[in-house]
Image (tube, rainbow, N blue to C red; front, side):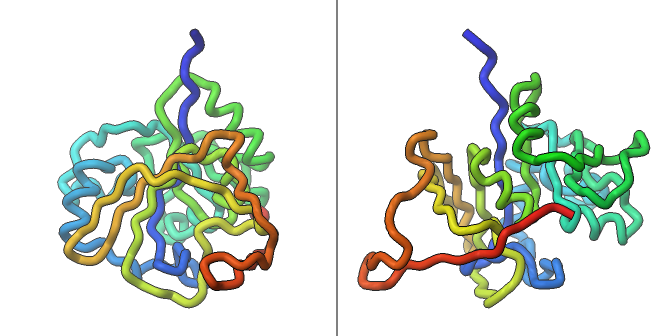
Amino acid sequence: MGVPLRKLVYYVASTLDGFIAAPDGSYDFLPLEPDVAAHLTAGWPQTFPTFSHPQLGIDRPTGRFDTVLMGRATYDPALRAGITSPYAHLRQYVFSRSLPPSAGTGPEVVAGDPVAFVRELKGRPGGDIWLCGGGQLAGQLLPEVDELVVKLHPVVAGSGIPLAARGFAAHRFTLTGTRAFDSGLVLLHYAAAPAGGRHCGGRTGAVRNGSTAAGSAGESSIS
């Protein structure tokens, strides 16, 4: 019996209308409330930047992940702050065709096809893989996502960077767990449907639940 493949887990904060950041990439309108912080630092400590660990009381974070994937736009805020290795406690990959090759410290820059890279990465020994963002990279990797964990904030943004930016292609996930917090956030856990049932059928414009369902989204690429 072969070794189980590593899982790709998209763990991300989102608004009620499906945006993970403002149009300029900022996300300070999605605050980390104290009740949520206590839960996440205990259950998901690896998903906090290394520099924040002392102030959050995180000592030697452990968990399911040993690798994090980032798009260029997700990595840029750390660079602008002078932080070249935001998740130094994990193996870091940044997908970009414009960043220079890795210099031996910080994240490894990947200029090739994200899907091919992730499929190869899943076959290597190791822990699970955290897809940190952003929306463009998540859109490209959506067919490879095994679990989706959404920190759903009680906020409607109206516009911004979508959770997964790609052309219309409905992918089905199965709800496996929820946790609601007094501050209004709901933590939603989903697992990808079996391979044969991941793509949702139906015609664009078909009437469902008394409303017209239609979808459109721009194509995306890494930069």
